[in-house]
Image (cartoon, rainbow over all chains, first blue to last red; front, side):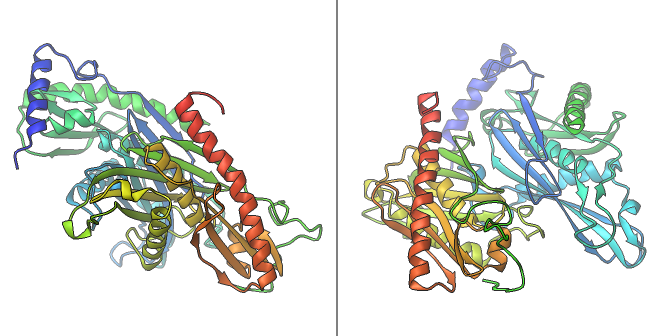
Length: 261
Length: 242
């Protein structure tokens, strides 16, 4: 099926790009307003709500007791999943997890896991017998573009404010989950031929490939992902990488502020 | 109902464990238009419950076999987020959520003027973000506000409320402990203006007199919640307090 509207939209986006403009008047590297709320859901051991423009995402952390893997008797586990349920937009349909939602969950998971911010040994209760399984579930409620950054931010903020419910499981006292870093994701989408930060829904609809960069506290790369059809040059990557560094510092500051409360 | 007799749910002073009177409901707050991607939406906080509803449509109904020549179909999905309960729940539909979705859809079909939109579909998505007893009712209230927010014509709003019985006493709006250890639960969906009932479930044990009293409490609470619903819609569309 020829998607007529996106074809017109693509023309318009290309025309705007020539004048270095965007549909909503933002500069290339300007993000929309980001609001973050933590500890907002009863029953979740850690929770966060992120709003970026019209995108609304919740993340909740739950713990369960499990037996460690035989080859890693002192290590707990971390799992991060995202649900793109039909509530999130007209284009989403009910059914088993879509490839998009699996990609989304796995990219967020890798950024957090590979940053090493959770020491898996710290999740051990009795070696070889009992360890904590940490589960981060991300719920996208409204998709108006760039759900990746919103999900990444919600997940780490929920994790960093999580309390291990040891009392409920009768294995000691409740305590704050140890999280040693704040990995942050920055996403770029090719719109009108060039990359922009924090694409809106319209820009995603009329745009091409996207690149997700997750950076740790020291500015090190922890996860990269290119999604959708398209190619890019090393020079283009160098450009967005620099923008990502700044963006991640800003969002990390936001998380730190909320944690302080 | 659990029906365990050994858990004290009413204090010696006659109040409930959380300090409420027997005919007092938990605090309710509602906000309309919370999800920019949806055609209509609402968030309802009822005690510690948090429910969000999104409405999409009316839109073309497909596959075609679900179309009705004379009216719109209402497609409801009630879903609990994995982190909404004390123990994490596995994502995805289960028998409970399917049943609640079905009866909720039928309740909403009874108030929406579905005959105005033949061959179309109205999608209602109810997401429970935090659950502390009574989520199906909170979901119905959220759905009704979201439908109104989407500008879909209805005969009336519909308010989800529940009463029940604990320690042989009829109480309004069960909390988690009361739901787990109480003797009966009677959730209903009430049309506040016409006084009709569009949603009804019950489990446990109620005498006819207890049922009558529970219903009386439900109607009283529906009136209160209805005002909060209307207020939320006014705030959204009149740009000020009602």
